[in-house]
Amino acid sequence: MSIPNVTSLSKRIKAGSEGGNEFARFLNLLLIEESKKEGNKITTFSDAAGDYKGVDCIISEEHDYTIGYQFKFYPSPLSSNHKTKIVEAIRSGINKFGELRELKIVTPDDLNKHDLAWFKEVEIQEAKKVKMPDADIFEIKTVINHMGHSHIVSLALKYPFLGKKYFPELFNYDVDLFRLIKFTHDDDLLFDFTFLNDSSFTYLLNSIDVIFLESWSSLSGLPEERHLKSSGKIVFEVNMRNEINTKKFDDPVILLPSTPFRFYIQLLNFYETMPGSSVKFKFRFHFNNGEFFMDSEPTTISG
Image (cartoon, rainbow, N blue to C red):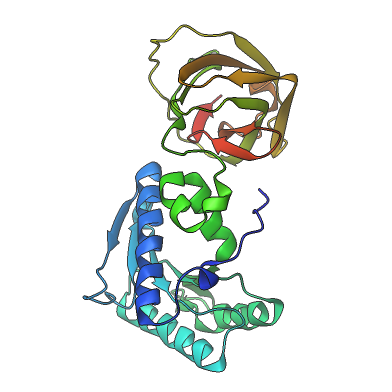
């Protein structure tokens, strides 16, 4: 996914300790929503309490995979003082939190090439390694990663009710009045979508993407609920070995003001092109000739 060209939070939030607290609060809110969507447990800590075991936020995934986040409101390029504090934070998190499997340092900017090269060295040097029994082999127990502007924007786009506060230009529509309110599917890969347009504007649906996310072994589905009569069915032939499959319309689908709009999408050639036994993917709807897009919830299909 290409990230829209918008300035980072280091340009949008006032510098200083209060700005750092505001940055942390926004990141916590984004990660809370992401954790709810993924079914993970998240623990955040208040500004007054400070960090816990050297981290500002903890996410617990399946199989006891624990990720710690350290929020550092440091602009790019990083100063030598900021680099020193990042290394200290990494060591603190790893030393205080023995069960940590991954530590993410979050800054408002993407790292430039010089800072990225420096961080790669830090990743290697500071990663927690454990010697394997009866062997001269070391296993990395805690990996270190960086999360910056691109990742923050991608989360803001996924949760418009949060993202619109800091990146309003990304949402050329009223996120409270125009939204995807229902998304279900059946065993025949017939997908049922309902958009609600409570605004006073007409929106034009120009194209739809099916975006491959990952392959895995578990199965999840959504119950079928149908209340509004469908406006029709869109037949969409896909190759799930491709990262993105796109269906463009010669004439846009019109979503009128103050009107709900329901339609089906029938995926063809899906099972024949699955790269694994199960596939996780999402739909992306492009409106008004690329002015904005809206994503569905990720879904998983098992072959």
